[in-house]
Image (tube, rainbow, N blue to C red; front, side, top):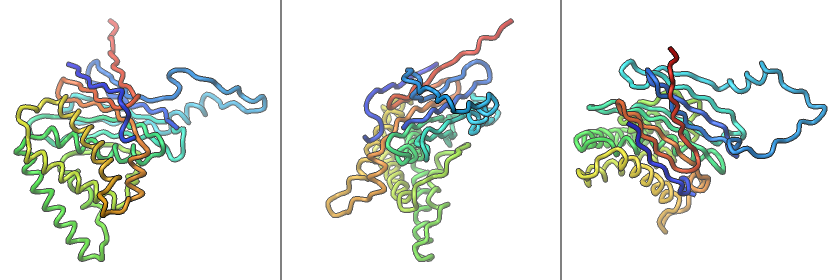
Amino acid sequence: MIRRILSNNPCFSLQQTSYLLSFARTRIISPACYHSDSIDGGFQEETPFDEQRLSSQEASGILRAHEASIDLEANCPVKYYEVNYLGANNPPEDRQAQARIHSVDSNMYLFGVFDGHGGPWCSDAVGQRLFEYISVTLHSPNDLGRIMQEAKRLVSTHQSHIHNHNHAHDKTSLNAITSLLLHSYYNPYKDTRNSKIKEIHQMNLLKHIEDLYTNFDHENTDIVAALESAFVKLDRDICAEAIPVETQHVDEDLLQICTAGSCACVALVKDDDLYIANCGDARAILGKLKLAY
């Protein structure tokens, strides 16, 4: 079964890179998420007469420099996934992420490509946060209650650590809530958020968990609604963080995340079902392998 949520509305908040992420089922399905300026054609610069062309081997080396193939668990409906990117900007504006949702009753996996616009800040933040929000919306009330209590304990431990170490931030504590929700896989990029931004994001994630637990809607628990809710909630949080109340100063780092903007194309795999959620002009392609006899 394949379900799709497709939106051509403006991307998160608010030049581009070729990015490819594909994953293969044990048998036939191979979706790919991509974004490229070159898909619709466009002009091609003429090669200067004195410019030396790359050999096929040199060109292949550049194209495959960031190529990776990652095997997943034996019980995962996805046997492996492959990822590659070719940066058109420095630093690259795009991000990718893959993770398994920690769930007691089901195996759910997330794969995403995030196409940044005016810099890497929004795509980096969305790539770090969107899976967390999706995971929260897909947990049961019992799971949310357990996660909320453990998250509060971890936050208290983190705050004690700051007090006892002259306000030094513990990176492990800052990512602790995320570890309750997700198991992340290969990611070639380092998290560019500073400790202050991470802490704000983690506290808003905890508030999101508390709000969902307190106001859990038993009538609205399907995956499509959960994906839509996670996209909208994260977008609102990014905007709210950048536009504080009157008594607070505008934080330039948070404002930069909001104004940069990013697309997001996410695939969720649950058992034999594949869901695609998309915000912006990236697209997912479903390929099918036809075996020859």
